[in-house]
Image (cartoon, rainbow, N blue to C red):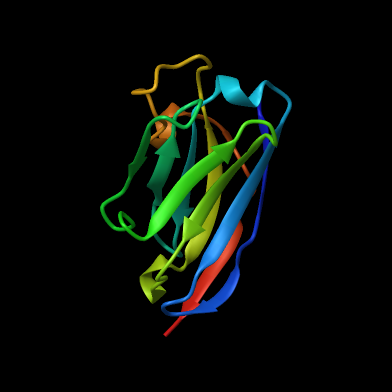
Length: 129
């Protein structure tokens, strides 16, 4: 199992930016597609973004497309989420996720919670209006 630790959350004003990081350990990082999910109070955990094993393929939820960018550095065993033009509705706990199966194709990305094998502990992002 992949161990994941997020960092970079915080409080930001609307229109601001944050970059989340997720450091992975325990298994070969480049074997796994990675993703970010978020969960607001009283709501389900929702997909945000995902990236294939070598970064050649990415996908985003409609709510963040054009504002958020997912990337990864396999040499550093880290996946990132650059969040720009943040809005109050982006307020949530953000979770890093590793795909359940290794060696997946570039088209197979963890966009549903059922496709996730490992979760981080989460990092809080709060956007004030």
